[in-house]
Structures are given as structure tokens and as C-alpha cells.
Image (cartoon, rainbow, N blue to C red):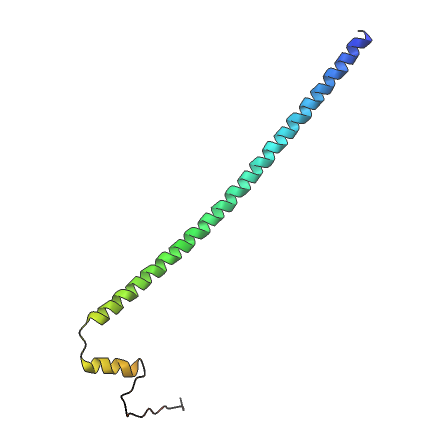
Length: 108
């Protein structure tokens, strides 16, 4: 083998090393992108689960409020006599008729 041929082999070997480095760097980059994508997917799944739980909570609250509204509508729509209205006004709302005195028991 002549000296020129040895130099060719060394240069060839240098290209092989550069190709190996480039291949390793490419693999490393692909691995890093895969890890990043996996982390993002996990984070998105956590956010989806959080939003689903919130949506279920809101749906339950909506159902309760609809039931309360239905009960109130039923109460409003029912025909009440003056005595029932007066009892509710006194007992639940604390209303009194003009001229009445309110006595509050502060002992309890």
C-alpha cells in the first residue's frame, strides 16, 4: 500500500465518523422529540380529565338548579290563599303588618 492510499483510508474513516456522529445526533434528536411529545400528551390527558370532571360537576349543579326552579315554579303556580301567603311572609321573610310590633326574644 502506498502513502496516498493510506491517506485515502484515513479520509474515508473521517467521513464515517462524521456520518456516525450525525446518525447519533439525529437519533438523539428524534428521541428528545419523542419524549417531548409523550410529555405533552400526558399533560393534555391530565387537562382533559380535569375538564371532564369540571363538566360533570357543572352538569350536576345544573340538574339541582333545574329541580329547584321546577319546585319554585310549582310553588308560584299553585293557588295559595291569603292566609298561606301571610304565613310565608311572616315566618320565612319576617314581614309584619302595618301597626304591629315585633318582639324579639334575645334570650335564645
